[in-house]
Length: 352
Ligand SMILES: NC(=O)c1ccc[n+]([C@@H]2O[C@H](COP(=O)([O-])OP(=O)(O)OC[C@H]3O[C@@H](n4cnc5c(N)ncnc54)[C@H](O)[C@@H]3O)[C@@H](O)[C@H]2O)c1
Image (cartoon, rainbow, N blue to C red; front, side, top):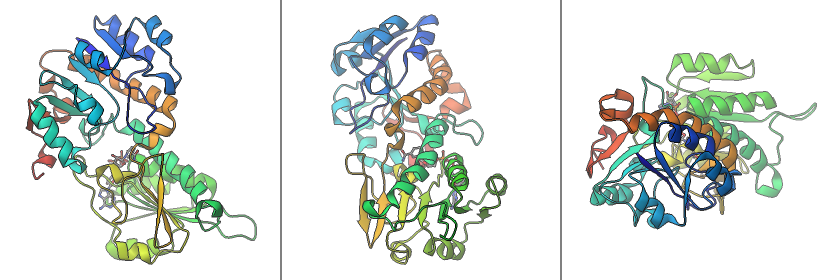
């Protein structure tokens, strides 16, 4: 198989589809890998690292897409990528089509097959979303505690408190991969943490993190009561493939304390907080009714080296299988197919 790795062109996105070690593994299995010039540079890998792995470096995006049959990239294609995609391409990347009807239409009109990392599913586990959710969950509390500082518009609070100074309250919606990572960091700082999830086992795991963590069922009234007292609210809900449900209304956000902070990690699926809108690292925050909002859709892009390494390790086994005939017979990869030869096939996208 001819595999192409274009350079990511989304604003301040520094991740790369595959690190050199992962390319070397694919090459050992007999595949050809084409990597666009400087694609790995923001992850700390230059063209020579790729050349040593046996990759062919392509001069630009046009020649990368031209050379390859399978395109592996990190973020959903934007205009600069879409112009090069063809009907005979197989695209393997994050797509988040439930929140992107225009992109869905465009992929349909190109007529290609697109497999979304985030809907590849093994049982209840999302193996290609998990590494990025690990990162986004941890970053949500790192970034949130920073935004709580007064010069950033926050209410000037140390999340963990101090002797004679109150602790902060972190409310986390969803105790999956991102939510549990957020809870781990928030509890280790010493904040009071309240996690909401309908899944009892996930609540039990959250409680086990420490006595300062409470796990609750997401009843509307319970969410309302806790969000009002939150210093940091983290949205980390997911219904695989579907648009995120709004668990926090604009009226509830209005009732939050001035200078409190919202980080809606699930913004890439439309967000679970009504007032969230997508932002990027160039302009990551906005303030609405005194509450600082952060809605960056590619949070792991801030730590591209860690993110590219973790993503590549998860991707290689799936890429090897995609290169074999009959790959779509396997349930986990079949769940990843969002668009097949121009037809939208994922059940969660049928209503778009
Ligand atoms: N912004 C970013 O850069 C970024 C990065 C990684 C992941 N994400 C997004 O983060 C979100 C979470 O991903 P994940 O891997 O943690 O998913 P996950 O499936 O591991 O966890 C989602 C959790 O939401 C829970 N949930 C479902 N409905 C709920 C409800 N009504 N109330 C409370 N909880 C509910 C589920 O039980 C599950 O535990 C996804 O939308 C994912 O795309 C965003």
